[in-house]
Image (cartoon, rainbow over all chains, first blue to last red; front, side, top):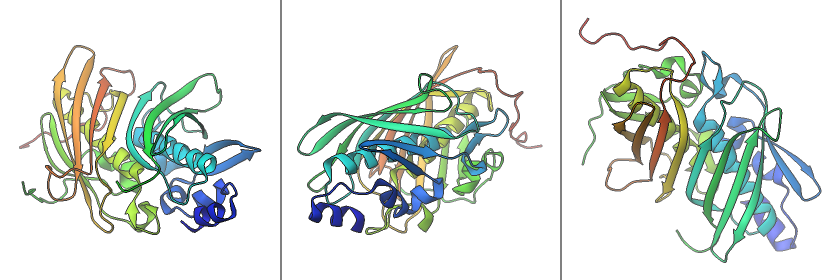
Length: 146
Length: 153
């Protein structure tokens, strides 16, 4: 990834918005970044194609999971400034509330950073940060092959 | 194990906007078991340098497949909610290749259904990812919309 490599060579933190803009799947979901200093909030603006249950209506569980996975990967790229994207090893998603058809926000916290594996915790919420709609805990590989 | 590659049934997923957006199709279904597929699409790429599809597509495919497996067994269509979903990623998806998912609802209790699933290209014994999920049954949502047409009439 050019964005990551350039930041790595220059010893800078990569621009998270440029990173998600360079990933087709993030564009497909419509993910945006709100960066305030070193604090990153990912934003999933509501769109009709993200709905999984049209009767409620509610966001698709896979979309919420994918959004939190992107949140984790962006946070790892930002904090570790590595030359390539982190790869998921395993993730566990807890669905806490149904995702209503409004914008969703995400924030990731690196729990433990090892040489090869990083443990991350992500929360996704809508209107109220204190009422998360889902949480993700996962391990991501940051160096070496597979 | 080679997959039967029958024509997509189009059942259930037609009414789900995100499933339609990723062109998710059911290709085989029986009570408690389902095979679904998502065709390769350049919009789903997670790493433009390798062309590999983003893990999020695998997540969405497995989540949906697990939900269909539960519904096909309990016939509570649209009235289930995912409690949790754990995914283990074994290997990246091949660039340009369609992804399949097999999901099996192996236990149903009064309130909860337990499901496991496998995402793969051609061979279930060479998985891209595996998952385990638990679903809450009988959530108040709709009144059985999405019920499939009765088989054989």
